[in-house]
Image 1 (cartoon, rainbow, N blue to C red):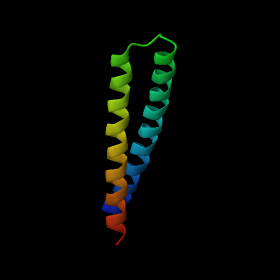
Image 2 (image 1 turned 45 degrees about the vertical axis):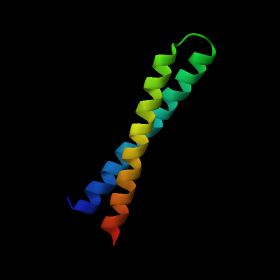
Image 3 (image 1 turned 90 degrees about the horizontal axis):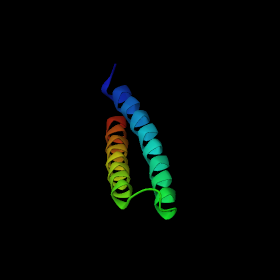
Length: 68
């Protein structure tokens, strides 16, 4: 496996994880608006979403750097 293909695989995996975290964040927001979920759960979901989004951006930039 080359570094370029490993970067692409990591990008795909982190993109799928980011989509999952975005769906969890939407679920937490709707639960918070319905007074079912506490605010700390909403904050935790937001932190996870930002962390997975930053990892996805990192792997995207890393994959583009390997293409040159």
